[in-house]
Amino acid sequence: MASLVVGIPSSGRKELLSRTIEHLSRQVLRPDKVILCTPEDEESQTPEYDPTLNLIHVQAPKGSCSQRNAMLDMLKGEDGILLIIDDDFFVHRTYLAAIKTIMLARPDIALANGFIIKDGIIGPGIPVAEANRMLEETQHDPARPVTVQEKIVGYGCNMAIRLEHARSVRFDENLPLYGWLEDVDFSHQLSRTGKIVDVSAVAGVHLGIKMGRTPGKKFGYSQIVNPIYLIQKGSMKKRHALFLMLRNMAMNVTRSVSPEPYLDRRGRLLGNILGLCDVIRGRINPQAVALLDRPRPGERMVL
Image 1 (tube, rainbow, N blue to C red):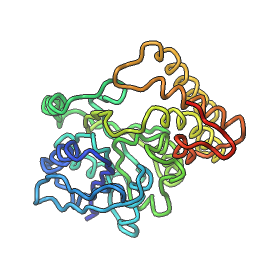
Image 2 (image 1 turned 60 degrees about the horizontal axis):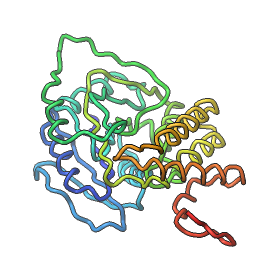
Image 3 (image 1 turned 180 degrees about the vertical axis):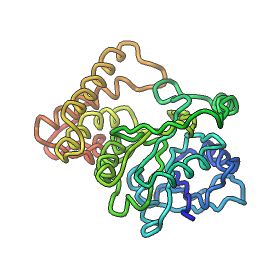
Image 4 (image 1 turned 135 degrees about the vertical axis):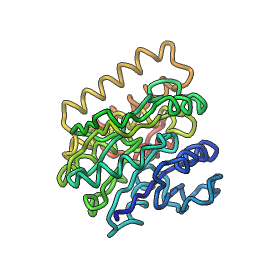
């Protein structure tokens, strides 16, 4: 029987993480193990969890890509499914049972996303109590036909990965911190060996909590530099990349006048401008985002 492992990369959100893990203990089908990966430079504090869960706590260099890779490396050579979820993604109690059934029946599936009941990433975020209510009100109907729909790109907040397809596939650690568009690149690599799909029978709520995410200026820089980097790498089409860049810049410009209280629009816009300047100069290095707060050699950075 193929194993089913849940992996959660997290940083600085211990209390929220406890609530996320709590939903794993309520599953109709319990995971064989849960891997929690936190940054090396962060104090190792395991959150509260059901002791009957087989939870393993590991550390890796900070960044969504390196932390996810640490989990893939742990399972190297194993068969089965690794479900990677964000630390603010609550799974419906039938999620694990349904995803395992479907992926065992469809060995051609390399990566599967579940149905997102609501995604708080596009707004102020969803409170824990509201997310729990949504899950309780979502009932699985056995008579409803399960749909499996192919697509091009998986969504990083919940991705069930067939380990057999990911033997030599890893997240690109050149995309640091939040790893903007890392799911696009990872999906491109996996699509060479299997299908990327949406599955209607599994569901969850992405809270989209803003605490602990990449600061506005750094995220805005990644909004420009990461797509250009992925064009050069060949894992993103020019039209798609340019559409995202233009859309994000337009939103940051228009909403900087009266920004949302939960987003640093002006910081993102500044990051966009710094990213454009680097692209024009031929400096296309996503890791340069880590140096934004430091003056560059020979330059005075006035922000």
